[in-house]
Amino acid sequence: MREKIFVALLVLITAAYGWGLGWIAWGFFRAGGAVGFGLALGVLILLLLTVWVTWREVLFGLRAGDLSRRYEPPAEAIAEDAREEFEAARAALQDGADGADRAEGDWRAWFRLAMAYDALRDRRNARMATRRAIEASRR
Image (cartoon, rainbow, N blue to C red; front, top):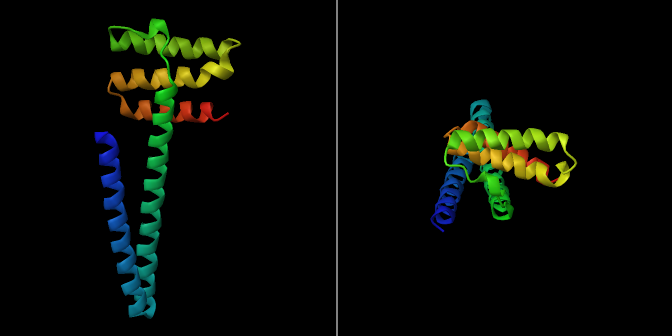
């Protein structure tokens, strides 16, 4: 529940930031002239980028949360060592690519790999694997 409140707070802060950027862009636009219009356009582009990045990250979080609720780890996934779980998850992903159960298990294998990366504190690869899991679950 704390995470949901935190995300809602961040979205509200981003909305306030967006409102402020819109107000600034409107002020530059009203000032007129080439400089005013140019600054208004620049601030408007910044506003659109802010909205796009926020929307993309919120969707990522919602989709990853959905996969987390649907995911049931295999019995052999309970490894004591994070490195062992990573190797098992990577092997499961490689085996799934060769096996007949690929359609159903592909997103689960990618999500398992994402959790293994996360346990190893490799956030960049964890996000990449989570994105692959989201893509595979939508097929």
